Image 1 (cartoon, rainbow, N blue to C red):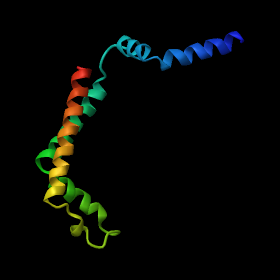
Image 2: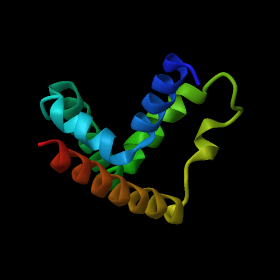
Image 3: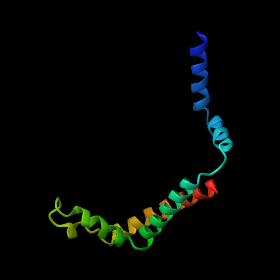
Length: 103
């Protein structure tokens, strides 16, 4: 093998190695303020989904006007809102874990 090809293959192996990715991330200086801001916004969105999922439906129903005959007919049932809340709790748990990892 030529030197350039061998170096390229070693570089691929380096980036495919999980410990190398972790080392590179830890050497880059820690957390990014932009990422922390996005995670905080995700936490707010998750809280809205858990506390008032009807607000999300109202926002989305306005976007359906024009191509859905009856946007009010697409409102979820009580079980649908419960499922949205459960999904929101899982989403909050993952977003919180990610935020803790970044801080």
